[in-house]
Image (cartoon, rainbow, N blue to C red; front, side, top):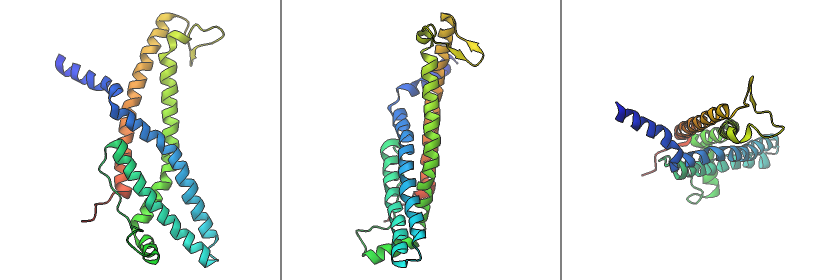
Length: 211
């Protein structure tokens, strides 16, 4: 029983020294700037393409270009997942180096994976925004609680948490312990979120390599 408890405790605390944890955190942090980039490029390009549809020679090539860019960015996303999450996900879409321009355009517009990639990449804006907000909140809360013994008696600083005012060292020390617990739980949550995103990536853009 003691051995089992010790092993469980080591697994629980060990997340803080596991290099994979911080690769997962890095992956989650990257979802925000990349999500903004994807949304700006793909949504902006799509809106412009639709607006220019009356000018067939401008609107249609622009929309095809959006799908082509989405396909290449999906490949980038799977490479990022393989590098940071140690995932086996791959994206196999039309290859511009193997076809003529017309053939590639036809392949991109008729391949369902191009549209799946487009939806996936646009969704990363929402996912990235949520991940950034959650990570920022967890980091600020963890640091603020953990540093309670240092901050609680700083002059002109009211160290309050809701209706609780921290005005003694034992209380500050207790909050510091809570902060460490919150930090460890947050790292576990990051690992779970990273794995969930890996599965989402596989679902949306994962494909079997061509034989």
